[in-house]
Image (cartoon, rainbow, N blue to C red):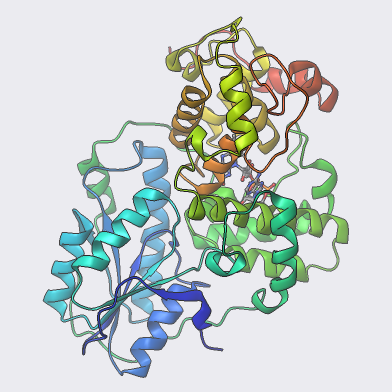
Length: 454
Ligand SMILES: Cc1cc2nc3c(=O)[nH]c(=O)nc-3n(C[C@H](O)[C@H](O)[C@H](O)COP(=O)(O)OP(=O)(O)OC[C@H]3O[C@@H](n4cnc5c(N)ncnc54)[C@H](O)[C@@H]3O)c2cc1C
């Protein structure tokens, strides 16, 4: 099976030159089930040339702490060793991408480059800068979404209900098995020294944050998926909204770093017919419709993390309530230290900081309370994204942007009854949480009297 050309688009108009093909791995950090890598290999085999994979490490990191970098580097170390075994040299390049990638391309006489897809601003800016500087063709392959983002829909979708039918119509042609990576038949003849992951970590001088129980890497991700399918998938639809149960998949850190392919996850879950159909459908709704809707939002909306990115009804109602008095106002530090009057919210903050992954239901309540306790919606969005992206292992993701914007600015949601501060944005409160699950058990597990970091 060859890679569907509809998954691929050119980022510049340069011609393919003689010389090797390079895959610039960025968002999708895996050796297997990676359409961008498979496409690069296909092109290299067509022209009988070597294939390289590069990873660009910025010296000024976009993530600020050791937790996320250790997880990422351990995953990349595994990728490096798998690729080496497939006769595909892997090299880390340090510095500004348009300079170091272009220098590499010139030094190795590269004929063509492939990169994976990421709709976030910082990633698009980098791809654009590299596309402009390269002397050869740069193509982008969407290997994160099951249906390529630009094909799933040609515009920003209003809500899940407008996106879902498009996904369901197209899905059967995209939800296929994925071919295996081949041992690359053409040698590069170049000797690349192994990456010094510990050394890179030291050089980045990051804030130290404790690691989590998540075991990084492709192998661990597949083990995690198999354990979810065999022990928890069957009850996913019943348990997923109860934060006191281990009812969700826990796959988001792996999906975020691309250590596992969403298409592989969906394919395996779809094939797991021994599990209840209702459970599989509920899971695939989140994994496909909701996840790919988040990429759609960030791809088509240039204000994706601003109040101006919200629906007109939401911007209007937010503006109308900006002067509503706030009974509680907290600073970013107080929130980060879980120092609010709300023991449930504090427990959620503790779960995120300590485990690197807050339960999905809690994330909605958590973000909505930040709107209630800060001076305005934009401040709330900024603080929620700061905390989310700092502590969640799956942070810095379109899902996080969209989740925060859904909670605070009504993105993909409808107008509800008018409320103080929230206006028509959907409201959630303590009493509602109490009705939903055993908040006492949750608070006992995560709540603490002392502050988090003292
Ligand atoms: C305020 C807020 C912040 C969020 N921040 C992030 C984030 O930084 N990174 C992140 O990946 N998700 C984020 N989400 C979405 C969702 O909460 C997580 O994807 C989910 O909790 C991850 O846990 P899981 O893999 O065990 O989920 P499961 O329930 O097992 O779902 C499986 C997969 O489906 C996808 N998914 C599930 N729920 C959603 C959703 N609401 N939107 C989009 N995709 C979804 C994810 O890829 C997830 O891994 C956020 C949601 C909110 C409301």
